[in-house]
Length: 157
Image (cartoon, rainbow, N blue to C red; front, side):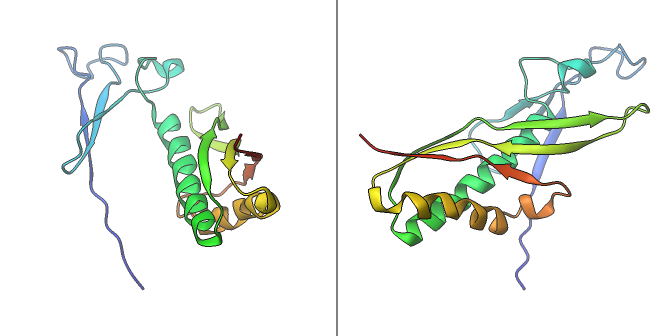
């Protein structure tokens, strides 16, 4: 069995001068970076939790991880099956339930990819590969909730 190790650096950049002296005295901003990557991801908490709306929050990053892992597996499977994908756009949604004590969990994720392919005779197969991509996705396999797929496959003009 192979093991893969990942290293991500997270640096809190939200000390406004007095650290976490009070709940309101600090920013939730942080920077996410990986070894030798060009750009950093600017993060914060969700604006409903006193974060900065212009920065990515953990919930969005979690959703984007599910989306990107699914897409990468899907594209791999399409390439293996001879399906030529020319465009892939997903506008996914997620629902997080917040408990009375402030804890929470994701209840659902819905992927809504629109995929453009060149092969008229492979539209059905292109639809079917989404389930296989979900079965292969490392992130989806680590989730304790169902990830729904509502793909739309269209032909390239």
